[in-house]
Figure 1 (cartoon, helix red, strand yellow):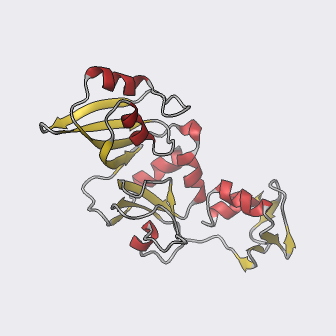
Figure 2 (cartoon, one colour):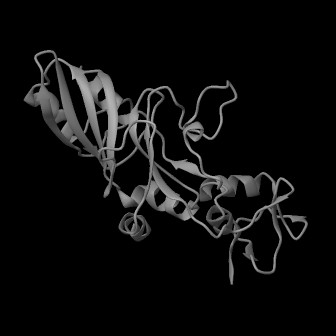
Length: 236
């Protein structure tokens, strides 16, 4: 069965479909020994030989779907030219997996890892509006006007955020913990939102992505997704 080259590459776990498209356009991909730069090019994995940087890529039989409770001090990347620790250092899969989305260097919590490029696209595509829930620790106690601004949408530097769900979980007399649910994923969005209302984030932890919950998974630990969770991701 024929399918688009970039889709097949994503299914092989090479990278997200968008990154695979860039690899094709950069002339890094060959089909049957010939460089292909056309994004609409179709291949049949049973008949064709596909190579990336002169190394054959094949559809892996086993797909990996897991979550990691990311600790502070790790980059959400496969590698780092400066030699810093990455989330891949915490994983022990023989398959080549990659993180879905990003968490800042000092942000902790839920990170989905997989070698299924289609799942990556389903979660990350803007039209899906997959909810992402965070616990943000801020100094002081935000008042109604601050919470209302976060809920209605706020300017974070040339961009007005979409409506969010915001509530105060606790206040210990010094710091507040806010529960913030966003439906988009701009860079450092929660930190920028809180800073915009005068309450910079001290600690930030992601606890869910859609129906996928972090639960009581300890920092640095990994859990495989169950059948229901995988089916949920495929249904997006």
